[in-house]
Length: 177
View: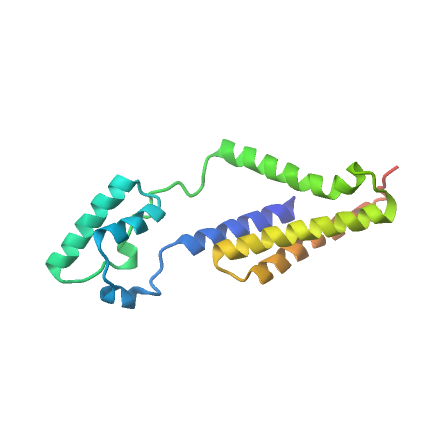
């Protein structure tokens, strides 16, 4: 569970960092031909309602044209407090429960479908490995990072946690009867 929480928080931070405004393209902004409709789309992607986005965009473009300063800078595009980044406690608890439960069923699937012994263990490891790689790659794609590196990280952490759990079980003589 600790490894899952580590990956969860780490992935959330990477996704949030990927959506934060940055200034890497600020030098090109004055040369762009932005109109209010295009700027309103930018505001809407950052969480503003359609009407508020269009109204703000018209004000910004009008002010830029009147002052002769050109297009707005990246930090001027939308206020940073227009959305709830953290979310609610109940929705986080419910989604955590549902995602952990759906993830916990994956290694049990071979036994549910009648496999046993080494074959079931191998199939379970393959299924879990695929699930770990897919979720890691998805976080990589959504955060703008390498999906391969995120998939490998997810796989290493997931299988590492499983190995530690297995080792502790062996150390304390825990087994399935």
